[in-house]
Amino acid sequence: MYRTEIPDSVIFFEETKTLASKLADILANYSDTEKPLLICGQNSYKELAHSVLEQLNPNKLNLEVSPAIEEILEPEFDFQGYSKSNSPVIAIGGGKILDYAKYLTFKTGRLLISIPSNASHDGIFSPISVISGLSLGSKRPDYLLIPLNILKKAPVISIQSGIGDLIANFTAIYDASLSKAIKHEAISEEALFLSYSASKAITDMIYEYCNADRLTSFLSNNTEKRKILLEALFRSYTFLKQFIHSLVLSGIAMDMAKSSRPCSGSEHMISHAIDKLYGHGVKATHGIQVAVASNYIIEKQIKSLQNLSQSLPPHLAEALQRDFQTYKLDFNIDELLFLLSMPRNFQDIGIKEEEIPQILELAPTTRAGKFSVLTLLTENLQTHN
Ligand SMILES: [Zn+2]
Image 1 (cartoon, rainbow, N blue to C red):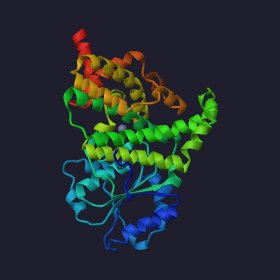
Image 2 (image 1 turned 180 degrees about the horizontal axis):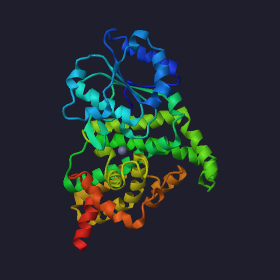
Image 3 (image 1 turned 135 degrees about the vertical axis):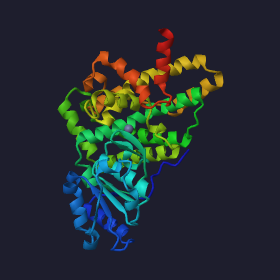
Image 4 (image 1 turned 60 degrees about the horizontal axis):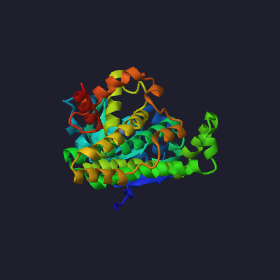
């Protein structure tokens, strides 16, 4: 059994005041002449950053201005200029801002203090940033300060998206298992276990909540009632702490595997294909798309497991069976999405039945060389044609 604790540098706060005082403590290690670099979106500034900064030592408000997001992707961008300062980078905002800060600090070697104003995917603690559609090697934050009082106000859709990205871990792990058995890909078992534990902890918590006396209302088709119950769950600190814990564990799993493998498989490739065909975020958020794709692909994976059990050499077939047992999915993804009032299939996000083959064809090319159940499906199609 592996350890599933998260580092001490991930700290939860229920009040902005205590978060600001922790930030001041960290900054106290740096001289007043070294300006921290603040990276912050406009909305996050209004919502959170100004109240954090107000409570800091006025000298620390002497902030450096950050370069524009588009600028740092230019090949001639002068990271050297930003590497000279020894002072920390403080990133306050949503996924885009935090990804940008992770990339900039990776390139400059500066300390990163990350303060998320919402968490809609597993990028908050991963060593990967997605900037302008590119997945770039990045740095994990040195400190992750979590303002629970702000997160509880985040839109329901952002929490649903984050859960969607965690549901994706299950199918990503099955793709990893298939690749281990068929392609003999070496993948850290501990990384797969962390990814599984992350997702299992949050789905267990959701089921526990639904299985209490609220179940009847949850399962009923009374959408309004379900919405109220969901909001109550998403706003509770116990849930939010586990939610962040799970997203952080996913990030650690990717860092450990030195790739996104434990948390991203065929369902992510399908989502990338949807982005390519219809535009990024046009059909749904990243987390919603991967959840819908997981719901679609899980049956194909289970079917492949059954077929391969007959065709693979016995020791590999057994290893594969064992993996599916170790990383067992003890609930139905479709039912979970229903309970969470999330889209469940392609039609729910505005994709017609006849458009699916094109998506499936494009999906494996979005991450060429990454083996998944999609490779098996494509091979099957080719042998039958
Ligand atoms: Zn993802």
